[in-house]
Image (cartoon, rainbow, N blue to C red; front, side, top):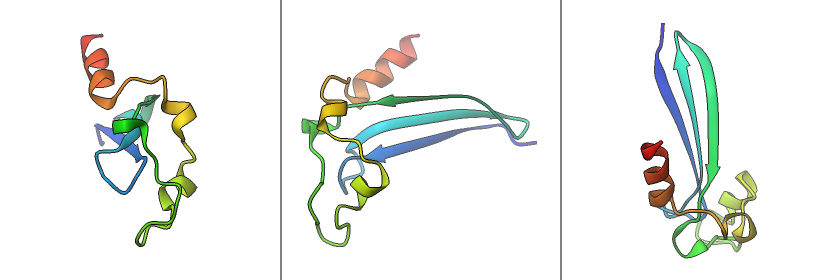
Length: 86
């Protein structure tokens, strides 16, 4: 059976480091266990809402997270530090 951790990162822009939400699920013997997710503030709390290149606001249509949701959240680096400390 499969044992792993599934990680999902949502981004605010076409830049891969613009993480705005993290989701994680542990899988034991092929069975999903507890899942957890966090909103995080991307660098500069900036989002792509306008059409750019070939993305055409695609990130926002997949996950309508915006500045009002992430404005008071920790950055990815800060949230990771908090979770590791627990």
